[in-house]
Image 1 (cartoon, rainbow, N blue to C red):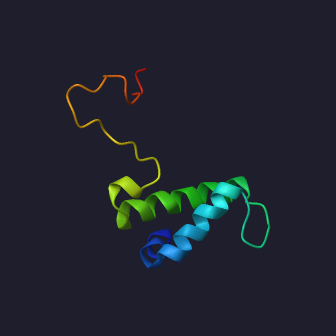
Image 2 (cartoon, one colour):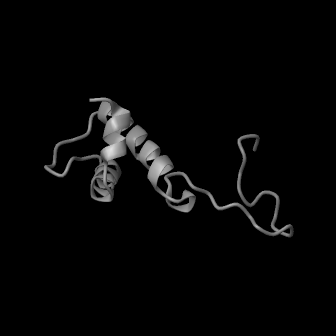
Length: 80
């Protein structure tokens, strides 16, 4: 089965279970995630978030300052 199809069919319960596994570095049964599994789980979490979650609930979301008086360095950029 294709990763895109799996993500399309994934529900929030599965998303949360994968997120918990990623945070702990273990599957629910206690087995350790390999490096390859971590990469695939992270990709699935990011893709699911992009397709199904509001922007502020996605992995890696950083709020943007919404006022002109906010310091320019409030959110670091890649140039800094």
